[in-house]
Amino acid sequence: MKRLFRTSVLVLVGIAALVAYTCTFVVDEREQALVVRFGKIDRTITEPGLYFKLPFVVDQVIYIDDRILFFETSDKPVQVIDSRRYLVDTITMFRIVDSTRFRESVQASLSRARDRIDTRLEAALKATYGRRTFEEALSEKRGEMMREIRDSLRPQARDIGIEIVDVRVRRMDLLPEVLRSTYDRMSAERLAEAAEIRAVGTERSLQIRAQADRQAVVLVAEAQRDAEIIRGEGEAKRNGIFASAFQQNPEFFAFYRSMKAYANSLQGSDTTFVLSPDSEFFEYFSGRAGTPGNQPAAGE
Image (cartoon, rainbow, N blue to C red; front, top):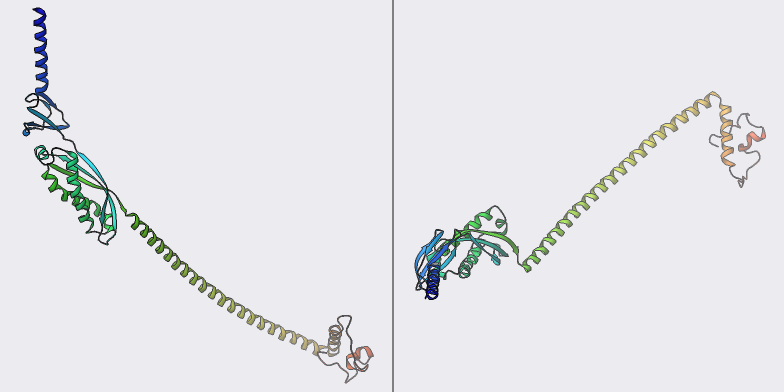
């Protein structure tokens, strides 16, 4: 009897423990809970704590994350106002604010909610970027564009119990084929700019050379002119000295000029003269120098 009684007590305690376990549940501060009774939402719990429910399959508890969640999308095609196409990566941050609506609209499934938001996000991206240029998308208007996309998502997200906290654009790249054509165009523009700069440099070089050549011609001409003037002045001064010396001693000047004529005429070893012995050229060899009428001509 004692053994049977003890066994009965243990069974009753086990059953009580099982019932207590199936009738209680805990909600922590990171989540909220929906109590569903026979497929219908009985109540929503948003505060953390220990709660009770009907045991077994009568009441079911669905836990819903109460934190800020996010999902990423990659390579969303958009087209800006100048018809260029780009790929955009985004991060969408959201929070579930209406558990009942979230359960009724998407069966409390984050993947279904993401699909709904993602469809609307792609449309919002195309609409927002389609009204702007690529330069505007990279300017200070970028923040305004992200707010516009966020506000465009909020009405549909609110219909499924979700609040869109923020939308951020992580990356914006050209499509591969557009990227190649853009690089080719940029390369062509740089080459054209380089050719233009090179042409300007060549033109400037020719101008500098022409100016330098003109200055060189002018300098040489002025130098030759000054040289001729100085040479003429020197010749005039030399002739003046010769004339003064001739007036002082005509006989010595005649002798000096004859000696110079001999030196200039008899240069080299193969010089041959065919002259008469009584020629005036040999007057200082024949002893006729100094007699009247026999003075050698100037310059001989």
